[in-house]
Image (tube, rainbow, N blue to C red; front, side, top):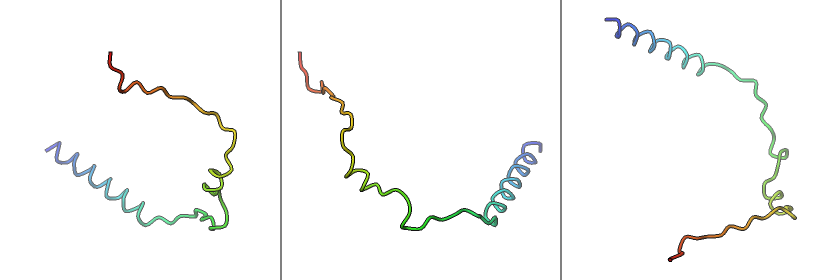
Length: 62
């Protein structure tokens, strides 16, 4: 009986929490398309970045 009532309490709290989240409104700002960082321009203008050499020993047989 104790497990069933604990399950009922948890299920009720989860349902209430989900319901409150679903009906809540947000005041988040949505940026326009013209603003922000353009990843293509970042990749095109990237110069002088550090490079790392990776030695691949996958097919070394002794």
